[in-house]
Image (tube, rainbow, N blue to C red; front, side, top):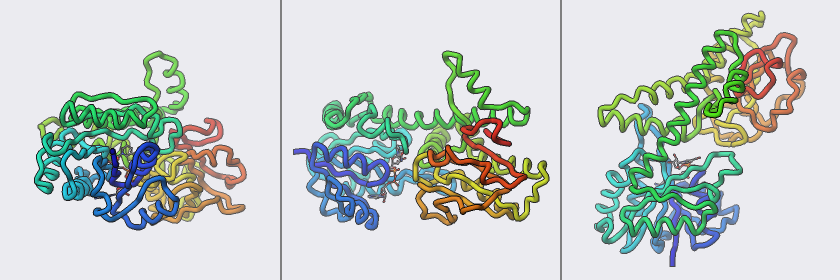
Length: 399
Ligand SMILES: NC(=O)c1ccc[n+]([C@@H]2O[C@H](COP(=O)([O-])OP(=O)(O)OC[C@H]3O[C@@H](n4cnc5c(N)ncnc54)[C@H](O)[C@@H]3O)[C@@H](O)[C@H]2O)c1
């Protein structure tokens, strides 16, 4: 009988636990007691615990804990290795440990397996097996959900691959792709996100050029998109937990092998600078219109890292906020759906009757698309649109 334990019940782990619970006995484990209580209150279809003893009876351990970077942008494998240690302590003959966290190629076999072996005293492919099956979910996306996405699977032996692959296949709607090795699966996941980062960086670069040249970037992209092989990416802020973090994992690995990752590094720098670029442009436009900057009232619409998603982790809207704050402006940040546990005050609604010297559509949640800007602007006002969703004629600046 398969009994599955999902370790780390966050954006990835919780939907995964729910999906596996449609077919199997599932226990969800997380070290965050408050989160466990919150999930329990929703009556989930799986058991939920912060007690490692309660997961000892499982035979599949799927690890979906964070893989952040430290303050020097180096991979921080501590949560992953801690979770691995937890599993190592309860590992039994014949168990499977599958990693879903995003890592650079080699982490599963070269970093995690030694911990599993040391802590458990057991041997890989004799006593237990490992696999890597990266998560591809896209926060806020209602189409590409956990059960709909084609999933890459891999295993420490051909036997492990078959078992792991059939486990995922039993709950997925669109099947799996069997990678030949664990390192290929790890590398595939990381380049999916690095590729997006680089492509968006190119769009941000051309947006800067065309903005300086007085050409509307959205119109350029629309025209270029009529070519069959043009890749339609958009300029914008790159925040969140994945695309703005994962490239550092591959950048770090490249350096270990003496390869200078010029393109990925430049992309990261460019994308990280877009928040202050937007804010500086708004200030310049206000100045040109004769709006007094010091003490100006500015409205920022949207705070989460992307549209129609509450996740505020690593949001780059904060860079817009901080840059504008340096100019002694008064800023209202309004986001009806964003998580509110943050150092900045986030309002659910635009204050009634208030008028602004500048309005910035930073994150185009669906709630904002029908807003009538005319009712919010002072006579002199700068309107900016970071994602190019408002008409060109309605805005003073857009990417
Ligand atoms: N969020 C996404 O859209 C997404 C998409 C694809 C891949 N990923 C990757 O999946 C992984 C998880 O991301 P997430 O967004 O779900 O993170 P998250 O922060 O939402 O959730 C991770 C959970 O793991 C828990 N945790 C931390 N250390 C633990 C430990 N030692 N034992 C048990 N639980 C522990 C945390 O308390 C948290 O609840 C990361 O590697 C991320 O890069 C995320």
